[in-house]
Image (cartoon, rainbow, N blue to C red; front, side, top):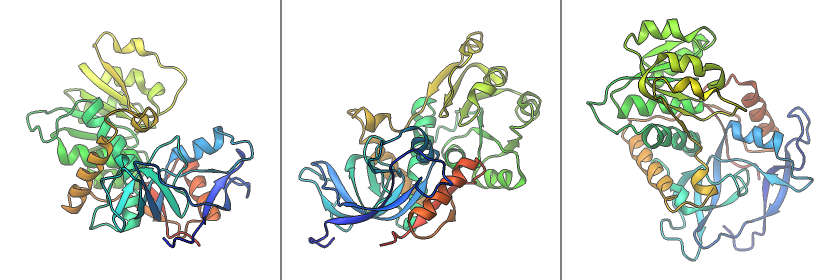
Length: 345
């Protein structure tokens, strides 16, 4: 970065507006952030868009002050904080960042280095930007919340994964297929989503728009041991309880107001939440785990074991393209991840 650079282009919002309003996301010029002691400053080369982006835009009104969204990025380190020790200028990195700090929809972005890893060398910035948020959610959900053991061949059974062609679903399917011995049953409702879910690692597909119980009885006659629920947890809990074996586990990532949790008691089924921002929001002592997880994922990607879930790139990063990306996310029909590449300077 040129030392004379003082401002940068960014995309922000000032009020919570419908995405078809041209003011819902706007091009803006902002000061270049200064990295804190454990921060690195990244020149953003590519970003991906997630449901959290539009949900925050819809519900968290900044009252006229510009707020920058975006929690998936890949780029190049241009400066490091006084106490930073994991990276140097010139390193190519990828990360999801922290929900309670400005997002990465800007040319330069300051982020805690403990949440960052070197990007997979075999992937482009765009391909890498599609991975962090969903991969962290999938990894934490599988191996921390559900307690699965990586490479434990004796750990057999079945995993039901909802919306297996979505961002989180497509990474969960890959990780479960590659690193566990579980049978992966994904839900999908369209031919194109079913095909993508199978390509990502789902061995069986059931239609989440139809009753789950009879479909699961056919593909998993011995029952299901784990459920990774990314959508419809409240609607499907009774079906989960029916399909799960005694002492089974559910991990959920979606949002809902209430849950009839009593349905889980007869089988002693455990319920877990997964929210990958917990570590960064609460500054947990182990937040560097996200650095380690993303580092392992980079190695798996470079070994050809994991692949990017980037499926659609909308071109340069600007307000018009991001409005289209938000619109696609709000439709609930996206497959894999939507990305944008190269900041429009």
